[in-house]
Amino acid sequence: MSDGPALGDRLEQAIERHADLEAEIEREEAAPPPRARLRRAAFWLAVTGVSLYVVFPSVIEVFGSWRNIRQLAPGWLALMAALQVAVLGCLWGLQRVAIHLRRWRPVITSQLAGNALSKIAPGGGAMGAALQYRMLLQAGVEPARAASGLTAANLLVFGFVLGLPVLAVPALVRGGVNRDLLEAAVLALVLLAGLCVVGVLMLASDRPLAWVGRVVQRVRNRLRPKVAPLEALPERLLRERNRIITTLGPRWKRALVMTAGRWAFDFGTLLAALAAVGAHPRPGLVLLAFCGAQVLGQIPVTPGGLGFVEAGLTAMLTLAGVSAGDAVLATFAYRLFSYWLQLPFGLLGLALHRRSP
Image (spheres, rainbow, N blue to C red):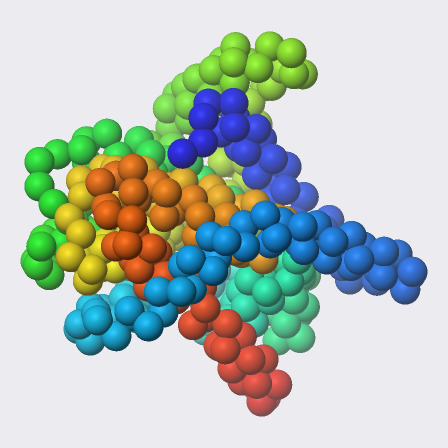
């Protein structure tokens, strides 16, 4: 898991990155000269190559367990696939609300294509967002509405990641993980309800969000006194929160539920992977490991955090009490459904988009 200063820095970087998404997309639209594009591509390829070299052993270890996937019951594999479909459904619904579209097809096709590109291209988050933006424009969506909607949706999704560790404290209760489907469903519903409560508090009231900003800012500045201090973080959080509400309009509650569902179903995929290998660690510890993996996935030096997520999630699951072999196999199963199997659907999104009237 990240420490206090890292969380503060990551929060500040996330706000700046998502708040400037419209400008980022505009820069992509105004194509730079060929030499500038070539230098930028070479730089990111070099950074990605060095990063993949560093994490290569962890990637090989996780991929080396692919043969063992046949040991998992088909029912668990089907459940993980269904949960990831639900994750995508929540994302589509959120973006549809944020962009204020009645049609589903432009959102679905552009999200599938942009998501796939962001998982394979170095520094792919911006490239994926730019591709989705262009596809939405081709589908007839107004530029300002597309850019502001994507920005609001991204801010809301990332904001929930920061709130997930709060739920890990009450989740540290007696019992194992997903001993049967009933417990899996109950745990997912509890997590969904908790995320919704936290989200409503943050969106409907200034005080809780400002308090979070002050705590993160204070901890970060005390632990890193030699670094330039973080200032006015509570005000920035409130400003971005107001921006989200303005963009979403009266349907912000619906967007909140879909954002919570996106993370609850994704967490459920990891729980199903652990249950499939017969591991039963504490739910709270698994939630902390899940949160750490999502933060590692934001590292832009490899596509989709490739290597960093595998190494970090395996290590954190081991610390949570999962045996090394089970942690590697569970990580592979989770990443198979949440990362690798989503890549071919990018081509499907592009094909369906081109066939749109």
